[in-house]
Length: 536
Image (cartoon, rainbow, N blue to C red; front, side, top):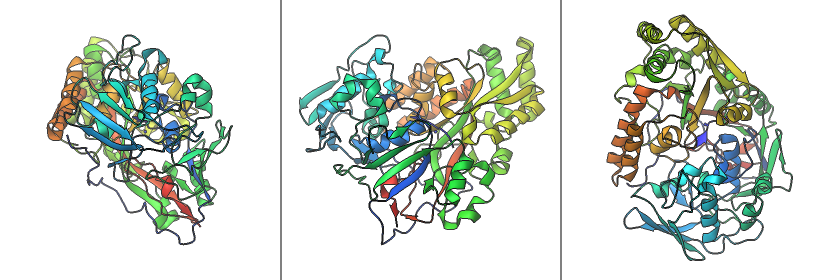
């Protein structure tokens, strides 16, 4: 679900596939003298929006909401769902699900977590006029509409701690989705003044805001352990301070001086040295992160047959192997599809994927065919956030395009992630732009539906293809996971023809931690399990 920020059947779980260039790291021996009141500090970015779960779809905000709210389930280190607020989630037909909530759970203002806490939050998130970025996560529930305000008729309260969810068709992976931010509950006070609540949210997760005003915009947010949380993510420390860094280099410098405890992004300037600098405190492991750049169809020269030719030419003009080796020092793997190798059902042999192979001669020929339709003019630019360490690869891609296509190409930096994301979501951006995806839950659909389905909330390029949509729908209604994954692979074959986004590479999570913390683990989606970290 989440936009990757500075730095993205049976229930599927992350597979054991290992990415090329991976090394050890990511765990340490717990200290025997841990201070359970110690505050853990980490890197982050200023959230794009107020902290409302149904309107948070980027990693800066998601890192916060996922720690101050607790949903029906959470994902463990390997991506397997574990009950959190849910006592049980049952179904006999993968269409109607009966959900029972654990008794005696409460928000940090003392309000009980009930069936209404989920029903009302989901109804708010799904309503068209509320314009929530994650509204599409509710599209499979009966009553959802993209055309008019319509309540989710598929949500029925049974009693204070029980409700049912009826979908429009069978979706065996529905329980797997429920750990995502969009499905978090809200206290009743949230819906009386959503804007005010978003600045000082009241949650039910392992952490809570330290005080009113704990969110210092563009500086940091201070969280403290929630003593009333009883789920499987009980904090083993006293709190979490998330610092909003202007650059990955600044965060890494603070890590080296122990001014920050753990970071989940190493700047490209340190790729050659960070494993030596940090030793066994360096982390480089597979994660469910996909990187790309999007070319909106509304841009001149990028619609119809001409646009298809130019997209293919651009893709074949990029030397992914060299960029990942030279710039990223093996912390990236060239993409072979639109998802991630750590997800069950991944394939590197989808029809049309040859367009990801470096072929300068064919790229030039494709570009010439497009010029025969309409001669190229102008400069091709890729927008990116300057606070995320992206200049190196953007410049390298631009140089590939210059050299192989004979055109002017360059990067178009914005100072912060929030600024570039605002321009993208407002549709005011007039260039191609960096995109990435950090999975919300460990399933192929999560890399496809949110980004490329018609009207999806993170479909930033406004891509639409009814054949692609049909295959997504078919896959999501399968009761067999292998059949569903085959449908998703077929859907990707369509993406390889249309190339609404140009796949680049899969990211490993590269990070590290300081000398005073222990029990540091990074999860399947690249985020540290902050609640496990201890500090001596």
